[in-house]
Image (cartoon, rainbow, N blue to C red; front, side, top):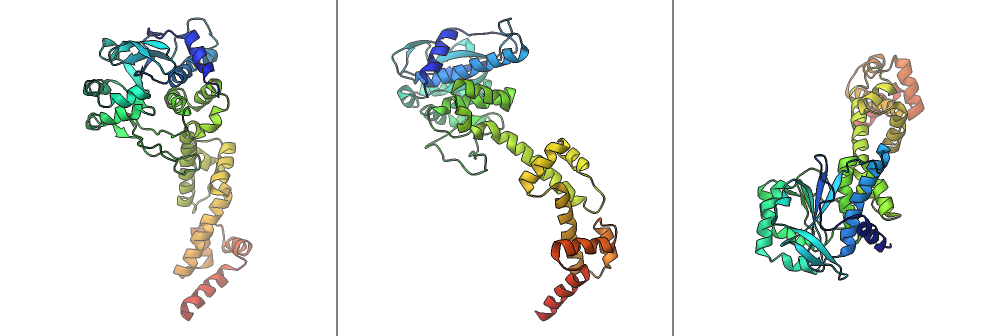
Length: 354
C-alpha cells in the first residue's frame, strides 16, 4: 500500500495549524501526537475524515457549494506548537492545555517513540484525566495505548469501560494486539487489525457510527484500495449481528406460535424485514426455509406429545397446528417414514425393554 498518497492528499487539502471547519453540527476530531509520531498514521486518520466529508457532499449533490462537513480535525500535543514527525516533517499543534479541548467528539492518541516515553509524564496523564469526561470517545493506536492505559483509573471511575474482545465475521475471536487497552464511553466494539491499518480502522469505527456501514466502506476503499476486504470485521460485524438477531427473534416467534396458522409475511414482519430478504436471510442462517422450520417445530412437538401423553392422534394434530390426524400422518410418513401410531408404539416398546 502506498501510504504516501494519503499523506500528499491530506497535506494538499488540510491545514495542520487550524480548526478546519467550525459549525454547530461539525464533530471535532482531536489527534494527540508526540515527538517522532508516525506521520502516515496521522494522515490516514485525517484523510478518512476528509473523505467522509467529501462523500457526504457527494450524496447531497452540493460538492463545493458550501455544504457543512461532518468533521473537523485538530492536531494536539501536550504543550502545543511544532512537533517533529517520524519523517522529520514538523506539524503545528494546539495545546492539550488550551481552551480548544471543549466540545470534542473523539480523541485519537497516536503512537511512536514519544508516546512510549509520555506514559511516564504525570502532568500529561493528569491533563488527560481532566479532559476525558468532556470527550465522547477516546481511542489509542499502537504505543498510544500505553498512554491511555496510564490514565485508566480515571476512566474507570467515570464509567469508561474496556472494549470487548472483537470477533471476525464468523464470530471467532480475533488475535489480540499485545498489551492492548482501549476505552470508550459508548457501546460498541473495536477490531484488531495489522498495522498500519489500525489508524484507518479506528477512524472507520467513528464514521460507521455516524453515517452507517455503506459510508464507512466507501471511505475505506477511497483511502486505501482493497482495504475494505481486510476490514470486514469492522464494516460488517454490527450489521450482520443485527440481521442475525432479527432472524433469531423470528425463529423464536415461529416456535412459540406453531400451534396456529402463521404465514411467511407474519414472520417477516416480526423480523422487520421484507419477505424476500427474510426468506433469503432465514435460509442462510437457519439452514431451512421458514415453512420448513415451522413444520419441524410442529413435528418436534408432535413427537413429544406422542411419547409423553395418551392424547389421540387427531388431538395431537390439532394441538400442533395440523388440521387432522390424517394430515399429521402424512407429515410423519414423509419426514420419518413411520406413522404417528407406530412412532408411539416403538417408543413405548423401547421404554418397556429398558
